[in-house]
Image 1: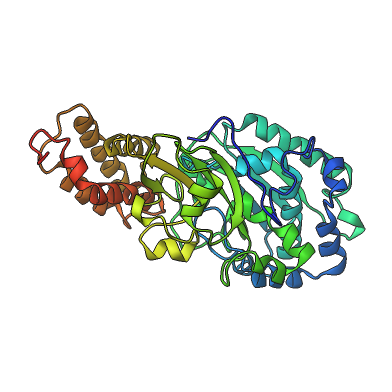
Image 2 (image 1 turned 120 degrees about the vertical axis):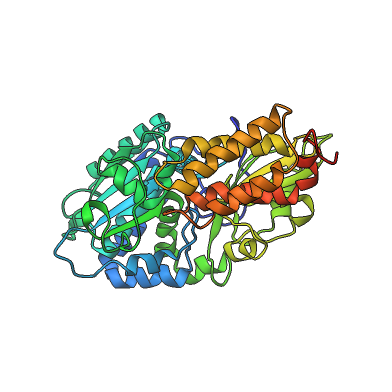
Length: 428
């Protein structure tokens, strides 16, 4: 769903996309010229591991992968002393439909991620990190590997970084295109060479993670924020967002808007502003029907519900979620049944099959919607979709169940009349 020619609007004091568009930013020399790796120098030579962790906590940095869990708090769950090695896993799988923000960070500024990895690893006491990147990102993975080699050559990776005695190796691991591996424990299983099936929790990865060792799992965008927090301080970062959710977010806007693309804006920017001010509104002749605010798994919002702040708590308050901050715009000319068909097909295909409610439920939902799309829908089909989705929600090992059920529930409930008008025994 990502556009082929993304358009980036520059706003004041950007954190992640400040230098996007500059030639060769992905080369370490260009990154160093613009202040790159100064935060690593400060963290390793002037700060303590606990001091770094406290600064990240004070900054209010919440995970940018979907769940929104505070990053500093997640780090603190890892035991300070352990007879086992500790690991950092970077989730660069980015399989959520409509999402393309991490790809832009990795393509334009991979050293920003690497710098964040180094600081996080030093803070938690980690000496080996893995970047789990989706298999379709072949060119992106190659660029990241090139950046890692450059960082190692300059002494920012490997043995005794900056002569501090701190060692760190970073490895790139390609996935095989399974959506489920974006779930953190399925990602760990895949990294270990197993089928990407989510684990039962507890135990949680912080204590029993990769290779049964303490593990931190963070998203690309989350870690890319760390250098700015360390360099400019938690108050500066917190001031860019909200009291409990500091900084900015990269919103990826797709659909029939004038300027689809990525926009780095303060956390809490309204959905209406994102669509109509930054993305230029809908194309001529188009009228807004609905918006999916956080990637395909987020419950849909109708056109009259977009005066909402784009932060975790505000969207949760109206029954949706910020997720990956991928804004998918839907216009009046798009039948909701078509949207539902794409949602159902994706989740039926991507269900890992481990949990019966998800495996069977997504399959039946897809069958009903296919029948409806073929013009053979029957009275009661929409209510059956709601029943099936409700039986998946909250009944699986991982969030996949909610991801598969919540968009179906919201579409079937908010657009029930439109969907029933498609039925041969319906009211329309």
